Amino acid sequence: MIICGAGHVGKAVSELAAFCDFHVTVIDDRPEFANAENLPAANRILVEDIPSALRRLPIDPMTFVVIVTRGHQHDEACPPRSYRVGGGGTSG
Image (cartoon, rainbow, N blue to C red; front, side, top):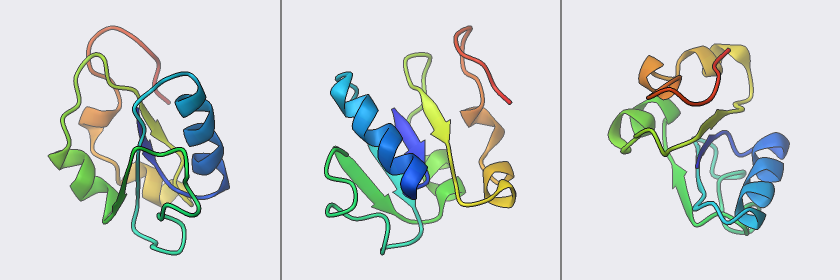
């Protein structure tokens, strides 16, 4: 699972996802949120521009992408390929 956003919602989702045995990657451009102290359940934390990181990371039909950034303008900046790959899940 790739979680875009390390705020309070991203943190909660990362904890739930880890509890459900997902491999959790969290991306956020704010080091004060995207760090091991704030996200102890995350397997991988990327402190970088979310759209750039999403373009670089492998996303396949088995990858869940959760977009919970700090604002709609940041959500909309996420590349469309993260919205839906394959037949599962919903977008919007």
